[in-house]
Length: 91
Image (cartoon, rainbow, N blue to C red; front, top):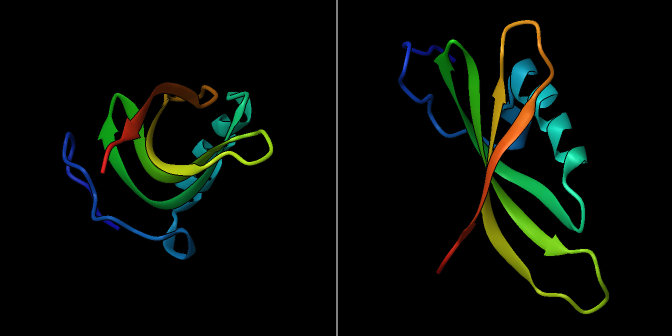
């Protein structure tokens, strides 16, 4: 997958995730109360890397309904991934 600085890569499914996407996904562990299952993602080269995950989200409680969410993760050079935004995607 090739990226231009500032441009987003093509949308890929989990079986096509880059090593960076897999590592950035570890930041999901910092999110409590809702589980996020990535269905697709894109990456962007900046001063570090931005990752955008399109996820099936579900509140961790019996009987809760699933919904779509977008989770943004930033990884600074030499740093751990950090979730910068979580947004519900409305139908």
